[in-house]
Image (cartoon, rainbow, N blue to C red):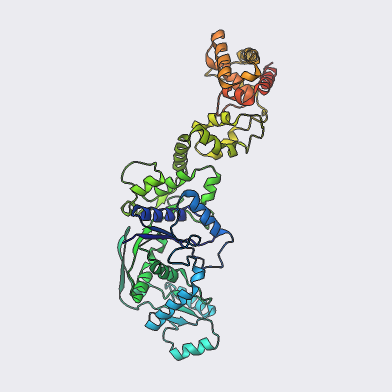
Length: 483
C-alpha cells in the first residue's frame, strides 16, 4: 500500500500555525513511507472565502518546504483538487445515497429550523434535525422540486445501534447513533458540506491516512456511516491534539492568534518554526529538540503523537529560533539581519557586517534587533549619571579623564585604518598605559558613544560602527556633559 496523505485547508485567510502543524504531520507521514502528499483546497464555504488566501496557502507551504506531489497547481491523477470544481461529482454521489436510502431530500426552510432548535433548547435537548422530511414520498419530493422549493440533501443516520471507529491516537471509540444529527450533505447551492466532501474526496483520491485536528473526532462516526453506505474502505484516522494558548484556551484563528506570517515578520526562521511545530503534540521518544526537516521525516511516527493538548510556549520557540540563528554563518546572519537593522539604521556609511557581528550571538529573534540600534543614527539625550557605575568604580572625574585620553588615542588612528582591531589595540593600550581596569576606560567610552546603559556591543564595537568622525564627535559631547 502506498501511503497517501492530504492537507485540505479552506481559503479563509492567513495560515494559522495549528493548520500548518496538520500539514507538517501529513507531509512527514507520507515522506516517511515514500508516499504521496496531496494538497486539496476546500472552498465550498464560499461566504467565508478570502481573496488571495489560496496564494497564501501555496506561498506558506513552499516557504517551509512542504512541497506537494499532487494539487491544484501541479495536477495529478485525481483532480481537480479544488472542491468547487468538483461540484458534479458530489451531486452524483449524493444521488446514490438517496437512491440507496442512506440520504434524503429536506425542504425545511430556515424559519422552521430555527423554531425547531428553540423548542428543543427550551426542553433542555441537544438541538438536532427532527427528521421532518425523512418520510416524504418520491412523488412528493419530485413535486416540491418541480415547484422550485429549495432543498438540501441530508444524511439518514440510523435511529438505533452504535457506531464504532478506531483512531490511531485515541484508540477505539463508540457512540450511540441516536446522538448523531442528520447533517446536511449537499447544500441548496449544490455545493457539499465539509462532512460530505471530505469523505468523497478522500476515497476518490485514495487517501490512506486522514490527519486532522481533534475537533473532527466527534464527527468521525458520521463519516464512517458514509463509507459503509458506499461500501468503501475506511482510511486510518489520525486526530491531533489541540494547540493551546494556555491551559484553558486554544490558539484560535478567529481570536486573531498568530499566523505563520506573523512569526516570519517577527524574525523567526522557517526552519525553527517548523521544528517547533513538530514538537507541539509529538515526541521523538528522546530529549532531542533540534531537527532539520529531513531529520523530522526520519524520526516521525504516529505513535509519537500525544493525546494531551500542546501549550504554545513563545519562550521555548524564541530559544529554539536563537539556536538556529547562532548556527548561521556570519554572512548568512548578516543577510537575514540586514532588513531588520535597516528598520532603525538609515545611515549608509555604517558597516552592516560589523553591526550584525555584535548581534549574532545575542539575538533570539530578528525583531529584537531594531530597538537595540536606536543610538546609531543619532545620539539620544542621556543623563550624565550613566557614567557612574559602582561595580566598575567609575566617577565623573575618572570618566572625564578617560574620555580625554581615549579621544586622543582614537584621534591618532588614520581614517583608512579605522577598524575593530586597530581601535581595540588603541584603547587596550591606553588601559595598560594608565594602569587601570578595563571598565575605567571602556565604560565611559561606551556611554559617551551610545548614550545608553545597555548596548549589543561594547565601546570598541560601537566606535568601529559609528566611524571615526562620529565617534570623536560623541566623545567630545560626553566630555562637555561631564565638564
